Image (cartoon, rainbow, N blue to C red; front, side):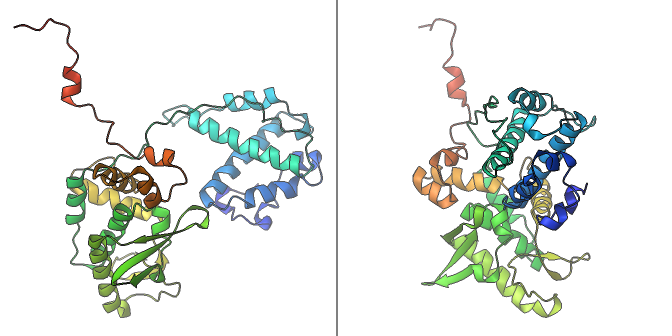
Length: 339
């Protein structure tokens, strides 16, 4: 079997990975398995589903099941409940969220086999769900003062500082996901009626158009103008990426785009310098939405700004009502009021 790192989403890379139990289940099972994984357009989802299916199919072979058609609802339920942490070094057992992801993957996979005629029924369809009540997102927003401190702390005397400030500001002022920011190209920023506008490619190739905040516009113009001046000292940029990686010496831009992990390390570095903790790429999305709502913005407008399909998702980013004030605590009194 090939490693997860070797999987690129193509049929060829899966050829040696498919176990015998699939061929014994149905002649179309291997093809349907490849189709199921290839239809996961998000590379992170595809990689996660590959790991889940690989572990599950290895388990079915260890149990010597003659075919996936022999699986029962109890088998799938016991498998998910019996999952353990990946290694002894892991500090915690698998969370309900992880088990829910495994169950969702198996349900979708078996459903694909049923639709393709490889299985008579879906053995995971009746497995009890893992109910996850999420009232607020895990990403903690920065206060307005801390957001300003973070942006002001970046040394903009260098091209790297100008790019880092522009990338962080873009996430904070447009509430964009880091995945959309790193995919931006030079043509993603255009000027209309004297103002810069952004074209963001969000999840599922969904185009999202946002006018630039004046402060963000200032940062973007400063970066792009400086990048144009020093372009001769940098590598070619045939794909036209807006934000690019630096070479190992960090003195010239390469022709490759930034990655999530490069942005993550960059954000953590700047945050640590001014004493901020628990700051990630996604913190800026929560910061923008919370600040927008705190300034009197409507919830539905925040939904459109963040490009959410539902206001229920937007509510997860609203941290205004999560803090307990001293006045709230002092309302609890166990003694009679004295005159």
